[in-house]
Length: 394
Image (cartoon, rainbow, N blue to C red):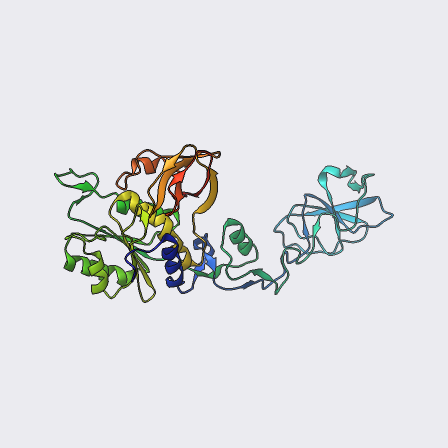
């Protein structure tokens, strides 16, 4: 196994390794953002009856007739059924059933009513005006949505409108976050000498919630190989995806790789030619996905957006890659060859400026960024107005 692989190799290994979570049924209320795991067919015509698209007056259109005697009204939702005789008209409202015997609706703004009689305007009225035919939305047996469709508010409204209540989807993963390190302290408590506040679990949970992933468990482990092994075993038993932070380098207190081995997680790769996040660790146990993320917060978030987020997309069969665009650089920049750089930056719609404070422990510059600039490992000099690749943050 190579000691370090390229960014492109890492992405490809993740794509080839991560499997889709098995499908399950859920209600429409739970399905926003999920992907259909089956084709959906309509079991009825929609609309199921001729329907008025306007508030107005319904009647049977006759070429030579210019007036109709009014009798009654038909409101939306009314189950009153009758046959409208020739020469008669009925007051009707949007969404109401057009009664048998009627085939045309005149919108109320054009109607002239005199002594209980509807007078047609001089403007042209055509047979079928303002009537939605049976099955004009969708016909019985027709394909409503296909497997692989990512559901959104509009498609969910469409399914509800044809009477669908539950559907089969590829669900969001259940996720465990394991934060490691003897130095970690809970925010809100007094910070002791040698301690740092845990930012990673809060940032990762928020990233997951941004993708509507709410089944998230957070575990903590000290720098103890037995404790970390037991924590990882617990997380694997309840989760589809495990995110471990810290302990992925080669120091005396870095035990994440050992925990992978002790828990039967197959290492797919360890270390990428990139900055930040070089020591990223990725593995699989059967169909469960495990990432060993670095400990520095900016590295954690960079690796989440560039590698974990696409993995979640593969698990859900939903495209979750950051949007990539080309933008001109606002100033010159130099870097050494050998590593791909992911740099925190601000894109103002015209050009992109690199943030001051690119160190992997700094979140202050990340908090003000709205994109990551991607600088290839082989290139060293970048110039003002040169177009470069940027990944827009959610």
